[in-house]
Length: 604
Image (cartoon, rainbow, N blue to C red; front, side, top):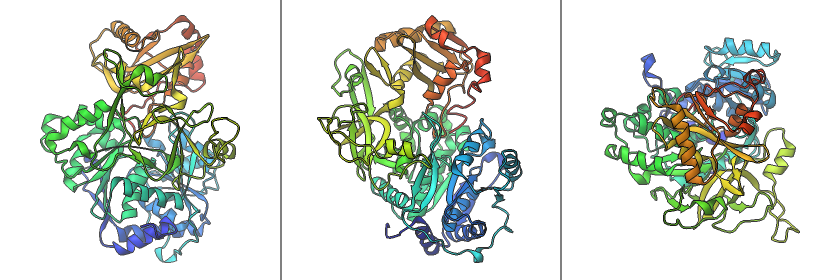
């Protein structure tokens, strides 16, 4: 399946060979009373040629084109059209579906130097107005669902090579501003082959999912991988899943979905929101690969989901914990198929020192879920300070090499030298291996050939020389009381003359709990569990904790909002030294900081 120079050549072959078969089935939200929408391979090919001809007539070959669509088949047609035109697709979030309106896509538009914007008729007027207001009068906006635009017979095959840019994948910005990862046709073909080898997909696979199309897991896993294989995919909008999680699971049974997944919070949401009556209607027996990635995989979620949905035919070996990122196109590692999740319980104190050790009786432990085996990359675990390799069983930064690794970020040569061309020093520190390594920014450890991801390098909380992973503290907080939403908290550190831990936690609506007592219970539990002072607790409304489009907690952003006075708490306990760091609320408003309007149940 890799005997193609470009992904465009592959799609042209697939659409010809499978012309009459369904390529995609989109399930509109029930509220519209709509029926499933079908798009055959032949229909996709014709629409892509028509739109591509419009792009080619405007000189879009080798130039960036911004795609702004609601979830649906129009996005897929437009993305394929960019492949056909030799243009570089730049998927972005539709501003009207995001709380930040046009602020994020304005940055993407400028950074990508887009020569055109593609959308649908319903959103074209607003987007055209935005372009005019931003001064982009030379950037045309096309409503691609207008059949009068372009002509399929005017299309011509583009001149592309394996190293031509296929698309720019803008990172979700969990720890920094979004950056455009340059994904070549070579990268894309290599990673699709890696996904197939890891998951074991075939001509009999049926994909299904709800993730945003502009997110790497949704785009590459749920749209481009089916095209790579020439198989059908069943899709729904993120909002449809978030409103009624049972629809995702019902889709699995209705269409015989075998492969699909999402971040850990999606499985947790199903456990909490699917009723007993709904459970009785589900059939998950065809689901052989339930991918769990994009954020830390929680052992308790894996156990809870498996137990809850076993009566519906879900098998424990179907869970597929995996690890990947936009900078590697998508997948890096995954559990061998049918092996099931592997959970490693380790001594908490040793992990804080950067080592794995067996649990000790009556002392705190941490449960790590393996992200599987790295097959199609070279992988090293490296001390991020000394840049020397760490031995197995020791925590360090994950560094990678492989054909799936992108060439870098768009227009960021200095950053690319640091991130995409890092060198490992020898034990003496006098020389290095020549470089070429991708620094992932993720901390992890290799043990018995398995990769365990422990956290983000930039988000480590270092107190008294100990490395604390914020997700461990967040889980501890959320175990204190049922009033706390799982996965709805953020922990980070701020500095005065020393480091101070700050914990922000959402309180579920309708919880009849004394907030002062709740905050006190959190302080006591953190102090007991981690042997550290916990003097800074903020209990907040649902939707305050910010997440990326893939569901990752934006701890760095939450820290920034906190210091800018942009967090409105229902109840807070702050140490005097920390309180002095926080800007007055009106100053926070002046800097643009504001309480977040996003949560795992409102955005993905």
